[in-house]
Image (cartoon, rainbow, N blue to C red; front, top):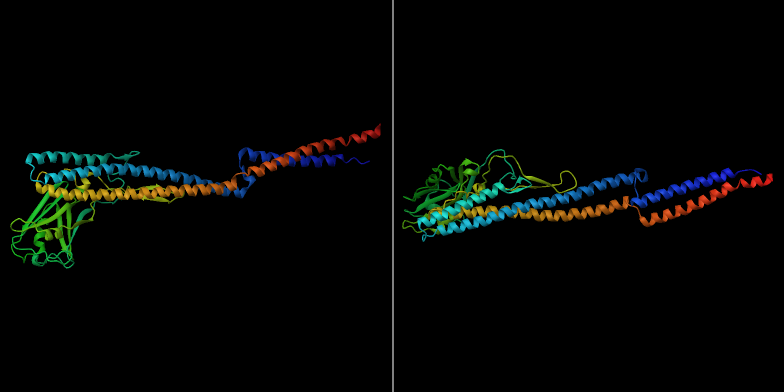
Length: 412
């Protein structure tokens, strides 16, 4: 009788080890909830899922970044909301001061309030912060390396130029302005809240447009006035916001003092063509709104201080000053409105960005889960199978170890 019980025991022992190892792996996966606990479980799957995890966490952080950006924008927009309210009050006071029912003392009181309101706009501009970052003092503006000189342009008919005789002066639609001898041009504008003015009275209709604009250019706040191809360009004498020309208007009155509406309106159609900027570096903000490098949103916020808007120390002490102040304030209100509109558009954009980021993160998480996470039901079945096999192998190993006892029976 050959004794081959060792072979049976070894085979059973090998099967027992395989079942035990399989059971241990299943228990590891069930305990962690992961199909891949180490690189050996699925090398390719591990590399792919780790890349996905980086993207998922990047998307989640980009969503938080976008929420922080919205908070910054809301802080700036809230400050500009108050600036708007103050500007509206200042305009209300300027309209009040324009009325000749007011005495000099009344206008002085109005002037005092306007001055304080201007100082408050300046303070808001200097002190509005988010996480200690200044928001509306120009630090977040699109930068220039040097200060730029302010220029405003008025529109006339395309053939109008400096050498055109006043008798042939046309508006933008080609209508003659019907000027007459004795008519007076009164030009008013504001620089840093201070009113400037110049006048010219027509002696002969052969005088040219340049005779009028030279009176503006003679003021120390103006560098030059030139009209070519229907565009009257007035350039400030000083670069930067301190020298910008605000509220420029040209009023034409007849010899008896009656305002000539058509001529006055045609000559007062000025708009900024070169914005005054102070010397500074580019401080515009880049918001990281994606999981990868370069996925950013750039936001700039212009200088919204009273000195830049031209309403600091704004003069309303006389009817003429109040009239100029109204136009200056209209421009300031329009400037603030444009900035608030830009901020609102960026906020709405960021809200859509957040929704898209959250959707992308959700879908990528689902894809990563299919690679990395264990199928609990399937793994429970596998663990149960290996448990049964392990128990059966243990029983068979016990039987295999009992086989040598048969040989001892022959010795009795």
